[in-house]
Amino acid sequence: MRRFAKLCLVGGLLAVPVIAYADKSDTLQLLDLFGEVFERVRADYVEPVKDSDLIEAAINGMLTSLDPHSGYMNEKAFKEMQVQTRGEFGGLGIEVTMENGLVKVVSPIDDTPAAKAGIKPGDYISYINDEAVMGLTLTDAVDKMRGPIDSKVKLTILREEATEPLELTLTRAEIKIKSVKERAEGDDIAYIRITSFTEQTTDLMREEFKRIKKDLPHLRGVVLDLRNNPGGLLEQAISVSDAFLTQGEIVSTRERDPNKTKRYSAHSGDELVDENIPVVILVNNGSASASEIVAGALQDHKRAIILGTKTFGKGSVQTVIPLTDHGAIRLTTARYYTPSGRSIQAKGIIPDIIVEQAKIEPLKSTDKLRSEAELRHRLENLQEKKAQEEKKAAGNEGKTEEKPAEPDHSKNGKDGKKTLASEAEVEAAQDFQLQRALDLLRAVNVYNQVSPDK
Image (cartoon, rainbow, N blue to C red; front, top):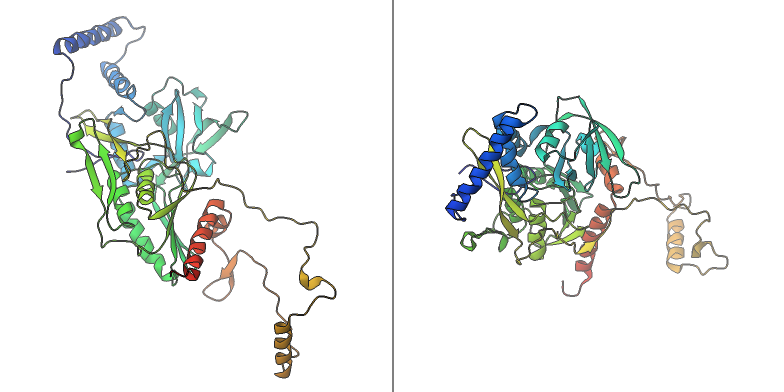
């Protein structure tokens, strides 16, 4: 069965039977009420309105009144959703939802105009090109943010810590998402960054890991970075989790009918790394939906340490149901639960170690730090003295002790010359949460080496 799902959603295409839950006569009376209002609007509204616009607005209003994630998509919007799921689309690269009449940012997507402009998870968009968002549907607001490539759009942002609204002008671009980026951190830790869960995510993760593995002769840990990952396809969240688990439940989805509960389990034999290799997962309030499935599964199975801040808290599954010649509806059909039975709906995943993001700056000391070696009448290091005497006896009196090199952001290229380190490496050095994850993995390795049980 072919599946469809929107980037910000977890779900697939399911056949849903129509079931009558209300008394038939009451339903017919309510439909008569709708017909009466519809005819009144057609006849008396101050301006002519297309019948199709009225019907689509009514359907969308019915769905959006249920929860922030249900809605109606016309044929154009449905096709755009399918393109997004494949990982290529045009726009600003921003994942949004509707809250209190405003567009709320779930997460900007890496390397897109939104991310480069500094838009953050939790921001509210109040105006688009000086037009108020209040009163618009989410679909209408998203349409206004889209447009021709290289055209500009002005957004007014409300941010919690800002005293005044922020006005940002972004240039629209073609968004081609490579949902997985990987690199070696030193020669011992693999860094895997997943920006969204699209159709290619698991395959890309395995391909990228195979590529960087040659740079990791002493692999001692993995950092799985799910920060600002708004989610995606349910099956991809399951397969990514399966890559780190050998057995056990990954996630369960529970519909209104308890007989329709589905459970998804891990399988042995396809692990990305040995189960003895420790894993740290980075999350923040921009980690939603499918990201929370992965984090919750590995946390419950004690396969990974979750580090960062509390996640977004989207614990529901949306099913996209195509309508013949009329687009599709996106309907919340289930809640998902972690292996231990936790629902993270409106709660989120609580990290094992809470680490707020911070700026790393070197301390500037006004006084020169002193050490024992600088004190007068200090005791000599007898081992050092003996080593120096042996060097002199061997004819090395003329050699001077080399000073340690000052740290820099350069490395040797293929020709042996110094080259500037990649932007990613410099950025990683300033990423406080990532540095704490690397410290944690290396500390675990040191502990395992010195532990008497090892």
